[in-house]
Image (cartoon, rainbow, N blue to C red; front, side):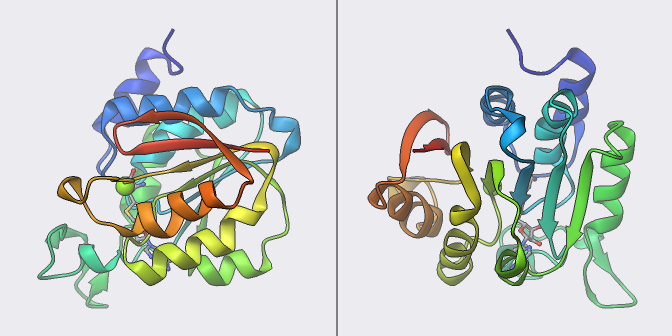
Length: 210
Ligand code: SAH
Ligand code: MG
């Protein structure tokens, strides 16, 4: 059975961003299985709100919140001259990327205001002061070596025992994509002895905190 209703799935698939449908549905399915009594959901890296459209409806049914951490200035690979740049997302007055207006519109149109809660700022800085244990953590932020390492170090300890930890863009074979999510997040998580892998869908890995 699909973890999302027809309208929810259509909204997620129509949203702008970087989340293939099969992986988004796997994300939603994993989130459906957690016990929301242990804490809220949090994602690192929201961009225009696509993955939030997969996780948000599940958070809503669980009567919890999905916190979406992003500075909305884009990752290195989203900047002008890089592979994943979208020029219409640059704020011409500021001269920087700004995905927050699109994110807000996406969340509004998906009927997820009140559930999907933007936390606008620098991920490692927010992790430093974040105290609430999480039932579901999804990391899809900066994909450079240092950003990926800092997201792992900052956020992995926030996953409550029994909670799930999902990681995007994990490519064990270098021919398929960049190394940092695999080397700086997935491998250290598995080596820590604190997580068991529960599913793999495309480049998505879902781990459970022991
Ligand atoms: N999950 C999204 C894609 C995220 S793209 C989707 O489904 O489409 C990666 C995002 O990480 C970008 O929006 C970028 O702004 C954000 N990001 C990168 N480094 C960050 C940092 N240090 N703090 C906060 N957000 C960051
Ligand atoms: Mg991604």
